[in-house]
Amino acid sequence: MKFAVAWSVFWTLVVLFVLAPLGEAAEIPHAAHQYRQELTRQARLVWGLDAPLAVMAAQVHQESYWNPKAISPVGAEGLGQFMPRTAEWMPDIDPVLAQPVPFNPRWSLRALARYDRWLHSRLKADTNCDRWAMTLSAYNGGLGWVLRDKALAVENGHSRWLWWDNVERYNAGRSAANFRENRHYPRRILHELTPRYAAAGWGEGVCF
Image (tube, rainbow, N blue to C red; front, side, top):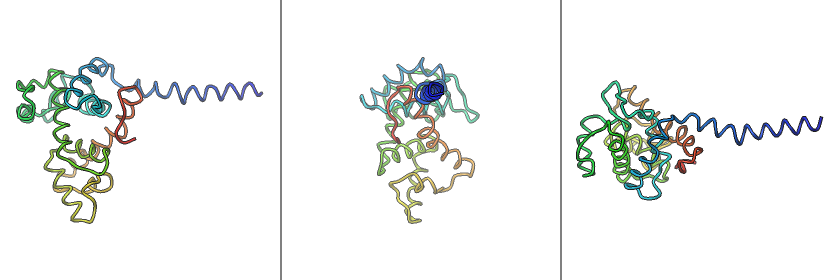
């Protein structure tokens, strides 16, 4: 009887500490491993050796599911899902991106890392988690909207320096559908997808 109990405990521990992490890793698309080295290279060229790789990997996962040929219903293209006008603007912040080719994985991953960096440098917050949530909201919907949402939060007695339960509550004018999508975007990337990549050894998250 004692042996059976011990055996049961053993397999419970196996499930919790071995199989569960493997299950999380299995939810990472196979293509992610194909582009991992390139993402690491481009992210570190832009951010340095402490680049938040797990976050950006989760972002690519959300944007395109690691499909370099992805095209969204509204016309966003490639791994980073850049709209044509945004792709044409990218050389303004990074001369390396002078030839907009969003379907090229190297270009797209460099552009994602650079655009994240550009947005991150223009958004201040009390914690890195809140700052990244604002950065991702801006990537998804535009920097101007985040700045207007921050101002609206202050007008209503909330902090402009906190995203969760503060700025995220306010909509400065988006349609209801766009507002829902925009608020889902950082929450899914930071709280659901980033932990998967962190568990698979892609680096640390920013919210846990």
